[in-house]
Length: 214
Image (cartoon, rainbow, N blue to C red; front, side):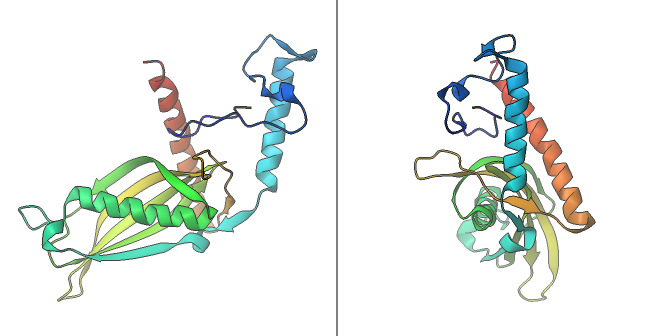
């Protein structure tokens, strides 16, 4: 049963065990499923999905924190001696994937990168320090936030240079989405990140739905 459409990864029909008729589409409002009204059946499926989400294992944000340090070499820079944006995006994707993998302990694929901001450049010879953390966990998707800092290797001065938000989807060996643990948040900061991530997820799903019309 298609319970939701999450990210650019196509979600296959999720079937509840025991009855083949559960593969009927929920959205067939007005049709009957074994004599039951489809809208009533839809509410029951949503209820079962909600119970499943509540009963799943949860992990803390601290369980998947990750940090990576890279030294900026000549082949990483542009003609101004600054770190290439594309190289930084690659590093951001790597650290984000590490965070997502630690949370779900499954294979992960990148579904979206959004909110990437370059505040200031990272110069040749400086260190790029990337820190990633979980923001939100859905059924099979995870939002990860990454912050990037530069460190002057001579003075030791640090500066916040970039921020990014990425969405990953946990998949099996065949590339099909699999469930991930829930995210247990503590404190106002983690709770705020979680709520904001939920809003971004809703906007992303709406955008994906609208794009399918073209």
